[in-house]
Amino acid sequence: MSEPLDTLRVGIVGLGIGRHHLRAYQQIPGVEIVAVADTQPARLEEFGAANNIPNLYEDYKPLIARDDLDIVNVCTPNFLHAPIAIAAMESGKHVLCEKPLASTLPDAEAMVATAARTGRALDVTFNHRQRADVQALKAYIDEGGLGRIYHAKAWWLRRNGIPGLGSWFTKKEMAGGGPLIDLGVHMLDMALYLLGEPRALAVSGAVYAELGPRGRGGSGMQKQLVGSGYEVEDLASAFIRLEGNAALLLETSWATYRANNDEFGVTLYGTEGGAEIRVVNYVQGDTLMFYTDVAGLPVDIQPHLGKGEGHLASIRRFVDILRSGDWSSLDGREGLTRARIIDACYRSAAEGREIVL
Image (cartoon, rainbow, N blue to C red; front, top):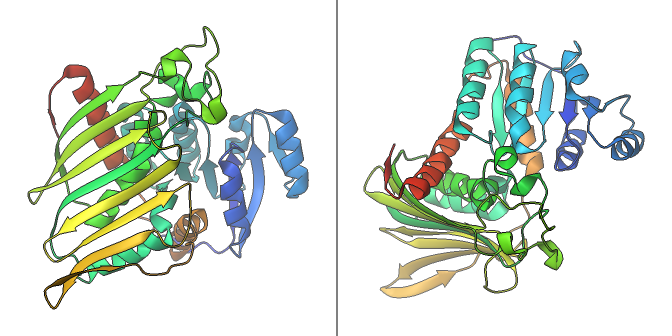
């Protein structure tokens, strides 16, 4: 147990998704954004001026070297997560990292080992578990409403949704993979969270790159740049065996010939009932269904829910735990568990066999 932290001073690295993190911190009392780093000078200056942030850097190293930061928030391309997070923890800062934890399993393991060695907090922002529908379903499950859940399906599918054809997203060394590590990690987290964090026993995976390499499937019908290279999958699926004789089917795509929308969700089958979350084009509201029996007759129930708090809830939880003085639960292991399963999916696809964990 350490001394509780009252005012928390934050440095953010990366202003892509980092903008959402900054807006969340701004809504939490007692948090000060001290510094921001980004490789795009114009964006950096504009954002610093608009948000009254005094210290702006085009390189993350001087930001980490500051002695007045409590938290470094990492919102960079995947391959930079590990070096930035490790350097920050070694300099005494706590780290909140965007998903995935890292682009490779060895990097994820090194991050968790550094957190343990330095005694610093390490956590991953899995903001979709903070949706109102996910939180309502989690509460229902914890009350026993579905009984024992023995089968689950989770998916995130896009028709034309490759983010930045020819950018770091489609480079294997920079991203670590395609939609499986980008979108699939969110749905894997959502499913494991709802199921109560069961241990994964074995994984069988398959990956495909059928559209991206031919310049198809970019967001807004964007075309692949000639010669830019497409090095990752555009569709992946996995069968994950879980302890307790349960199973999870995971499917994710950036580009595939299907309904022209962006859809994600989870379906759960239990001994006492079922449930499904289906979100099309990021809609909030009537996305959750419960399936049960009343007087021997099938009944479908759709609760009316709000939006949930997403990044704000994730970041507030991180801040609250730090302020308590006991951040031992923020050890990065949830992120590492997801990284191990994702890695096993890719290994299974490459080797053509089931991977036992």
